[in-house]
Length: 471
Image 1 (cartoon, rainbow, N blue to C red):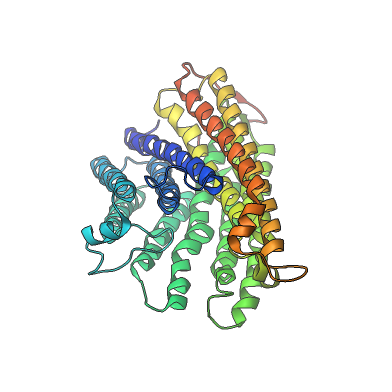
Image 2 (cartoon, one colour):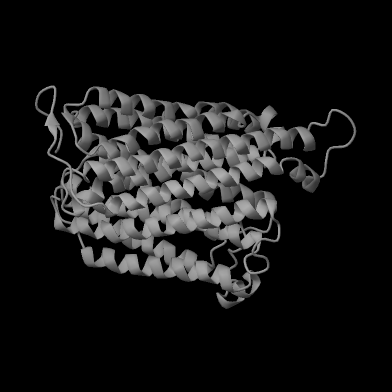
């Protein structure tokens, strides 16, 4: 490590991985509850398991982004972190708030939890993905603001780089858009309209800036390609992501009450949303092809390549499959949506966090060239198990969604099946999805096991002349 304060990212990465395990455990619980309706009932009802599963996803990714930022910003700025103490304090505050919130979901009735957290005075609870008590939302906002203060002060006193600028811009956008989580209008159409400002503009807007910055940073380190070349690609990708993603929010406005012009705006700009993800694929493979060094951390390189491909498939291809208004009229809210969501989140955000962990954690453990070859082989087994399992989860959910749409929304004769009758017809795909989820969990265990293998890789081998990028 160049700067000692970069070590503050380690607890963020560790806690992120712990929460990742929890998310997958509750995902398996949900998978069983789809086909065994009374599994763990009444101890963990379906709605509680779903809350925990989705909230853990959001929180552990935020921990991952914060850990990545604390690692990257000092090195990019060429200066120590403004306040490592503040970073540690914010870690414990965020970890405690997140843990208490999840325990509240599990052991306190949701209505009672709302009473205990004074939701009646400032109601924000009850909306999907934003179920957190108001005091948790306020705590998260304060953590984000403290976090932004720390990294912005670090960036201002050091070298200014495109990677830092894009990263911090995405983080500021994350904080600003979180404010809409506090806006809870009584009109349902208005509520959903602004609700998507958090949900969509996070994952299809500012989070893409964070993803692009992390990917660019890792590629600079692993390939040795000139920083200027990578930064030019990053600018173009970010511009395309914002141009398509912001107006592309309209594909959520098709059926909730806004004016009819959103049918056109949402369809056209959503159809363009795969472009920045395709550009990331071309960008990553082009940089790897032009690399000036063979970095010994092959596992991190695999994660970097994999995230671009899987993000393009999940967010790009599977997003496009049902984003046009004439198609979405039949498919919205079906298992096709779930298929898209699973692969998109895994490809775009889970994998990019695992990429920076794969690169940074060995360095913080005194292994500047990465983990040993044996550890990397095990880690790559984890990569392939999780990635292939996610592909099958997506395919099974897609098949379930197509059949669901056919049975419930496009009947060839007579009335469409009821929801529950339709669910009985697609139960086989849910079982297959659960089996694929179990393999995903196995891959995660293998991945985590790789960090317990001792030793480090040998120094890198230079190729194609000296690297001019930052080492």
